[in-house]
Image (cartoon, rainbow, N blue to C red; front, side, top):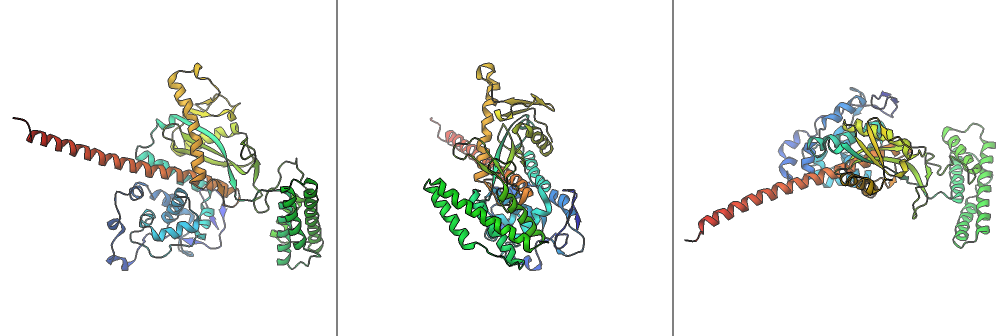
Length: 465
């Protein structure tokens, strides 16, 4: 049991971990070439590794480990860097560990001095570390990306004068929840748990249920609605019979069976127009959100609020929100988070019409809605109103390039962690591009000065008589 100062609750784990080892090498590495002698020091990832203040994570997360109890924990910098790389380059837990062995720049970014030929950890260690840190700890990762950009002068107070705010939907990794599929899956889960608990069911309906689901899909595809409803009714009847059979034969089920039994009863009783419906047996936190999109009428997941700078498009705030709140009610919390992460309060926030109804000023931040006409504004003011839509491609990049399109992490905590890490990945890629740009600019400036000096020398040498 560990008292977490970051999350504020007592965490329970299968085993305690003592402080991570500070050294990454042993005596056998003294006769090998160091990574900083092999790699290109001008590589953006190499320079970024030297720019990030990694000691912040030791101070923030070091108290989550105990002294001299259990096996040594994995290096904190390694865990943080792997999560950065995972969301910056859009790979899974398994892939980021596998590519670590193949990429010397990734190893240097993770803090290793010598090239590693073996996997540093099991991918499941990333899952356990995320649970230990929580979404409040993940905000520290996002804050460090912003602090690094501030130290490099890529983000200044001028950037935080105007921000764009918008919401999107982070979809959960679940199948599209039709009633027939929910009945079928709920029954299959209950049958599997009943076998595990040695409950002898009267009938499992495995063969009949599979056939009914298959025919229901075929009839729906053929637009034969009455036949499809008949097969769907069969699936519901099968589910109800299994529920009643388990309740008769098991008066005191264990925690897992009781939880799944309660969820199956919710699916069995819920109607089409009910509120707070259940859309997944394994992910009860999933909500049905309609954003008015033509190509996708409903999305199943949670709402995410995003704050970006109007100038240069840095993500300075991102949080997953459950309960499908109204966009306007999320604005105050989004601006507060941006102030906590950056240290500066935005002067102006530009939002779309979904934030209608909010006051024009929220704690010294002026709120501008996209409902004004160009004729009523000065040209300079209209420029920033046009910049509001710049947040839309940012949302697209966080989804397509940084793993916010489909969330595979478990529970509400997983939704919050994945959204924040997507913002970290976006900022990390911007840092790499900024470093690459300035390297190119320095080389071009040096080449230009050398070329001008060469021209002057030849002009003096070959002056006409």
